[in-house]
Image (tube, rainbow, N blue to C red; front, side):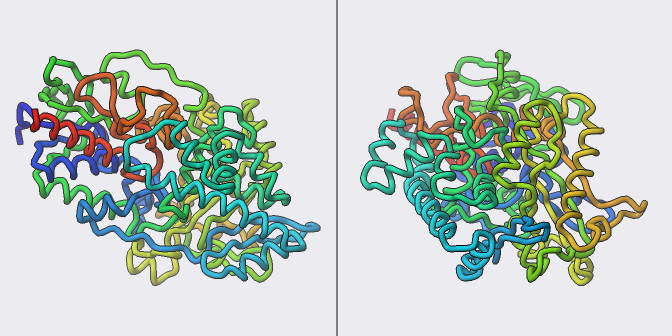
Length: 532
């Protein structure tokens, strides 16, 4: 089908933020074209049949959901359910050479308190843990609802957080001072400190006292969602969200095309020319507005600009997808696999151990004990598996490896991925009571159903600069630039051009917030035009 010669909006990239914007604009009567370079729609939120021999649809690149506002789903009329996990986390540790495990329950406070008492010998750790959670709650109560409003200055928010001693401490702990200070002040035990600090490391290369405070910003995105910070399992996987957004957009006549990489965008004065490839031919359409749902390096390339990354833009995560025929038994006594794997399963994530792994990676070496955490989607929602796999007890596991910066894979990428996978499996075998490999499913050729994605894989497959799952350095929920105060955080210095992905201010993770904000900005402009 031939393309129209002109669209109200062309969206570059079909990740969930682009689809959110497309759904809003199309349902407001605008003509919308979404162009995706890959052969699938949904970007990092796509669910895929990772192991072709099995009917299991894993969220190959994304994970759990916390930051997607209910308002977006309600306004767009999208049915998307997330389900609470019965367990928040299990952390493997050893005492006197014997395996143990810390369980933090989402449903049973007494279970959590008893597990912490077993770890530390008393209730002081529980009290410190609760104090830190209260600080997180004070931060979330104000920061979370602000994400869908125009961004305000640091000074504005500093004033807002001065109303009570708790709020002042939250601001100082999470915004002004390195995160490690707050954790060390409230929590004394290494295992619990490490568990709490993981939220400051997933996806970024940082340490507890990093003066850049990138760890604080990463922590912020992990603890404010829905005002509670709880991460929930998407029922049906991420494809349920993607499919719902596609239907809502295309029912309103938005056009979404895969295998259509955009080469360049040219400013024609009152409109833009978007040049892309489709069906082996170069195409050009005019657009009143261009929404870029891609990272800053891609943005610069499209507009013929220079781009230089900064240190905190470097991605630092490996993602390992696994299909298991059964969950392994654990060495830790009294902890069933269904409990341990129901939440986030933490290995080698002690506070001191992660400081060591960071320093080793900073020196260019693979960490001797690479820290990682795992979650099992299918214990909470098994609908991503076929009925046959469900009946046979199959499960999916997703592993996120920390302290795996882009730089480590610049040379000998394949060999380093293989070695890192070996180290992950060796670590799992230290905490399981049976060989972990025996629990992995095998494909028709006898190979283990396990795949690892390096930051370079994320860059190649998703066009994520430096393999950064957040597109670039995460931003605060406020701005230090007076010119951005009161804006939506998606504007650029070019008329009719907007950032529509995670690199927008307050972007990052599966939130849909940048897509929502772009739509709000455009609707605001349209009202101005109508009044004029």
